[in-house]
Image (cartoon, rainbow, N blue to C red):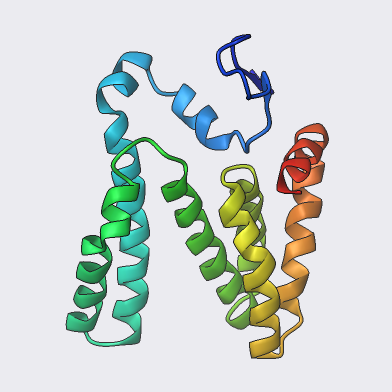
Length: 180
């Protein structure tokens, strides 16, 4: 149920009503509890494998296959990635949605405008999934707008936030409060 409420008195310094972006928790709640209890560790690895597949695909289209394989090995062996994703955490899904958003936005701005709808959908999902990955867009999109001299990159940020507000106004305002 939204908003997520912790049992009273569980954490002394934590508010009972939680407003961290809830999408990852909702997706976990859709899984059978018994399966989740036994296999929770698998979720982040599967999501991270998706991110690795996207990065490998990008590298493979830009250069030789050995270079793409090198990118995959470097990513797979990076200590931060291995340590970070050893437990159930929202960061891998945030990273995958961020990569997906940037790829869809790139294709929407460079190859075919039809990709912009997918980019906006992924951006809204990102906003409702992981706070820090969404905040990364605050810097990445204006930077891309300046570097590419294409103002449309910067317009994507208010578009995502506007659409997220339309999807769930009360939740959006609480999440925006948490960003502050």
